[in-house]
Length: 136
Image 1 (cartoon, rainbow, N blue to C red):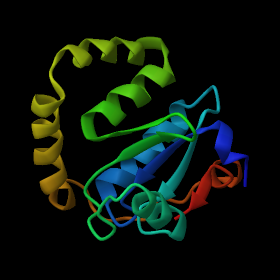
Image 2 (image 1 turned 90 degrees about the vertical axis):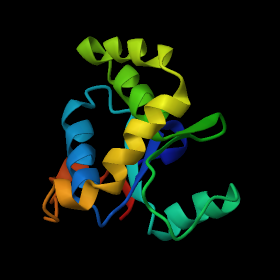
Image 3 (image 1 turned 180 degrees about the vertical axis):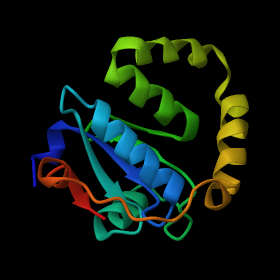
Image 4 (image 1 turned 60 degrees about the vertical axis):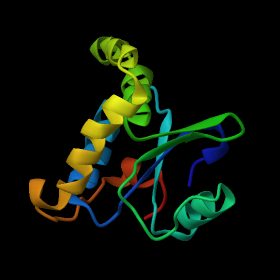
């Protein structure tokens, strides 16, 4: 396992096909090797949630955590991931002009329907990508 303290950690629902699709999408575009991943159901994910007083049995929110600095949730996490990926994805900064309560409504709608949107197939990372997972 790589040194996760110097990375951005993406926490996701490990049982969700849409979430697994987005993890794979990020992995394929993470040219700067700045992300690692952990499912919310894992011990690491549960510890992250508990330490912040967040729900430990509801997994419909994506979190982006930069250890020692900040964590973001829902649409703000998505926008920050896109920004960190750089290139054309930096255009996501335009989304930051939309108030979080509005963009989170869109996020919540997708989240509520995520189990219907993608089949629940398991993503199998390659050897390099496996190193980017703290726990699943």
